[in-house]
Length: 102
Image (cartoon, rainbow, N blue to C red; front, side, top):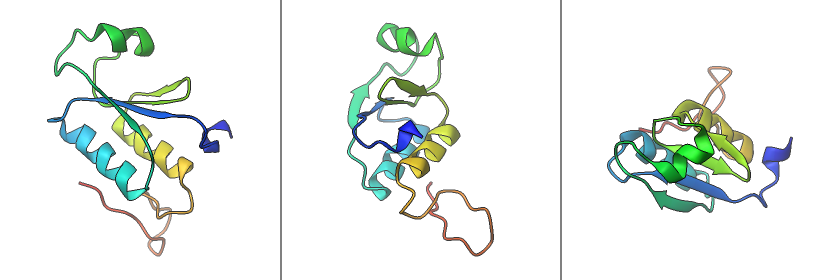
């Protein structure tokens, strides 16, 4: 699975007031991930981002190398795959440790 290669840069496209972006920023901190920030407009148009996402209109968007992740739930799953050794944001059982964000 190529996503586990930590040589890929993480770039978060977001705006500071977004509660969904705050959830992702917090999650990346809890996972101790290095990431870069690109502040975007609160509302479209976002021409620099539209080119990368095919016009997807919601924030946040996470770029991992050449891959774009355009949904907060999917982003959190991706972060779990990037750092599987730390507690997961999701649980498959009642006994597995889970990080609660938000």
